[in-house]
Image (tube, rainbow, N blue to C red):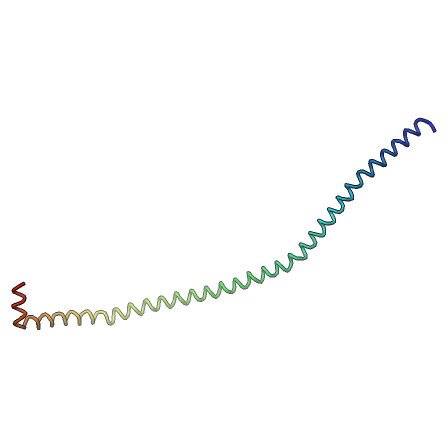
Length: 125
């Protein structure tokens, strides 16, 4: 064996040790990639039912909002009908009631004016 062969063997040994030292982090990195892959697979398996449930919830919410919109429209229509009814009642009954109240006040004033004791009391004040 010559000196060049020994130097080649030493270099090959150092290279083997260096490859051995670099293999440990590469194996650990491979495990990290495996764990990441498993986590992504588990997430994708769990997200499908979650998305289906969210879709169902949104669909039911839209149905309830349509019902609320229908109820709101009915309440609005009822409010308009009640308002029209009150206006009609006021126009129909209110006018004659005001005239009746005015007439009764006039009759009362006339009757009180005819009483003799009221005239004396009125003149004292």
